[in-house]
Length: 186
Image (cartoon, rainbow, N blue to C red; front, side, top):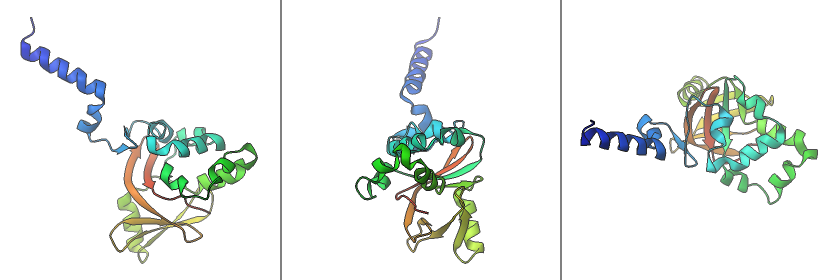
């Protein structure tokens, strides 16, 4: 017969599993209220983030779910819902229309870089190149990653727009996500 201590520990362990507290114990990063598991791919994790519902809807509208669920590896600079809300009124609604799929795809693939580039790798690359890492996106144009005066890291698009990396190194089975606070424009 199990002791009272064994029963308690079993019940406590079950409660931790049921509440997702295991994610905290395992030290998985939390994004949008959800644990991001390194065993899941970019899409599998993103759909659980309450901060990325607009991005997920846009990825679906552009037909990129299969690509971003594939083997990669990819580095994704993932704008939050608040980042999309900074765009002029009606922009997102217009972009997700079927007739604008090409433009939406161009914008989304501008947020993706082939390969898995951790924050440390980006910092090393920037240090080697005068403080600016230059990346070629899947879309084909360049992004720059640079350190701000306050020590935070920024992604700069072709038009000079800037997005701050708010959460770095969210590892995925097929790459890495860096959460950003603005949408980048090719």
